[in-house]
Every structure is written in C-alpha cells, then in structure tokens.
Image (cartoon, rainbow, N blue to C red; front, side, top):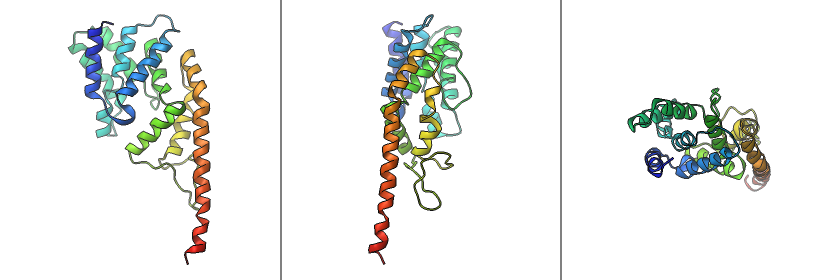
Length: 224
C-alpha cells in the first residue's frame, strides 16, 4: 500500500474514531497484531488487510448513539461506501467490507477470507491478557457498569451465570472464553502467552472484593 493511500484511510479512521477503549491506539495495536500474524500466513492481500484493520471500528460512534445498532454492520457499510467514493474497485471494497462485517466476537458470523480471519484474531488479541483486562474495565466504566454485583444474600457474585452486567460477568461471558475462538496459529500463540495474566487479575480482584465485604461484619459491632 502506498503512503498516500494509508494516510487517506488513516485520516478517515481518526475522523470516525471513538475515544476510550476503542480509540485510535486500539486500531494501531490491531494493525500491528494483524501484520505480525500475516507474516506467518500465505496468500494474504496486505492492502485489503491494512484497510480492514484501519476501518474495522468506524461504526462505533453510531452504536454508541444507538446501542441497538451493530458497529460491525454499520462500519462495513461505511467502509464500502468510503472506499468506492475514493475510487477503489468494487472487489477491493467488498473484501474490506466483508472483513469488517465479520470481525465481531458476539455475532454468529464467522470470517471467511484469510484477511477477515486475521482481522478477527488481531482485534481479539487486544481483549486478552493484561491489555484486555484494562480495556474491558475502561469500557465498562464508559457505559456505567459496575465491577461486580451482589447475590441476594449480600455476598459478591463471581459473575459466572449472572444476568446483571458487570466486569465479573463480562470476564466469564467473553474474556475467559475468547481463547478458543482464534483462527490463526500465530494469533493463538500470542493469546495463550497472555492468558495467565488475565486469569491472575480476575482471581486477585475477586479475592480482594470478597475479603473487603467480609470485613463489613465489623460495622455491625460499632453501629447500634
């Protein structure tokens, strides 16, 4: 890809970018992961891959305004329209669109092309390990969700099977499960090398929160 093309795509990405957990730095990390994975794969169209990485979250603002929308679906349409307006071929724009459309973990829409699989893995690598914990905490704070919820008896829930949103629930619903979802060998290797860090943090935080709640028993002794 020529520098002029990269700058065109990058500028459009920054114009559409959200702040917080899905900011431009997230996109830059996804691109770095994607290029690392691409080194180990055959028949990768690097231009499609770079464009898809840069544009994969352009629909985030629309989803933030209307949570009923899917940012992958909105972003796929935006990416296709933008690329066509800039003179890219229909085939190129469609390849990027399809990769953007299938990058989301929560949708039952598996990626098909190699570029789409690499984008999926690269995006998920920013959800594993210590970085994944940090970004999840940041995002939960953005949408106003708590770290944890309490069970009917007043004890702290570990999040497994919870109906109420919280960081602990998200750990069980997504962060713990994501390691089995990778498509590429290199993506899997990087993810597995970071799994223990996320597990240690979750266990440590759960332990500390539960210990703190146990200390509240002292309140009954000093407040009559």
